[in-house]
Amino acid sequence: MARFRYRMQNILDVKEKMESQARNEFAIANAKLAEEEEKLAGLEARKLSYEDELRALYSADLELLKINETQDAIDNLKERIVIQKGNVKQAAHNVDLAREKLTLAMQERKTHEKLKERQFEEFKQEEAAKESKEIDELVSFRHGQEE
Image (cartoon, rainbow, N blue to C red; front, top):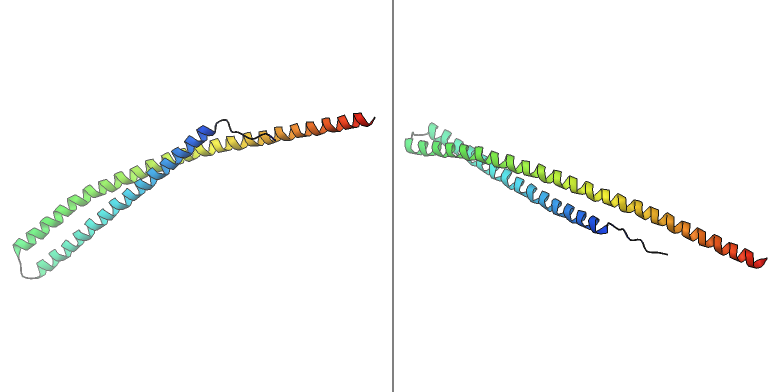
């Protein structure tokens, strides 16, 4: 029996490598998004802590210097939070782009795998037809010899 050889195997291999690379890029983008979200959560927690401290300062003896420092820290954190939200939004956008790239790579690989499967089925049918023809010829030859 002949051996099956997919004539576009090198293309399928490239598509598999591209999918693997896209999968890695997607994982990296997801990790970056998680990191940016974690930074944002940390900034928001610090802001809440400063706001609690500011409320405590207002209810205690008025220390204007400490109140001003705390208010400045809150304002600074608000600015950093706005910037960090932009970073999170950009990271989420990068995740979406990486997901689209991965989806496309997966579709291309699956398309080539389907082509390979179809070629293999055709190969099996051709081999079965050859085998059937050989059997018919053998039967005809034997039948001819018996007469």
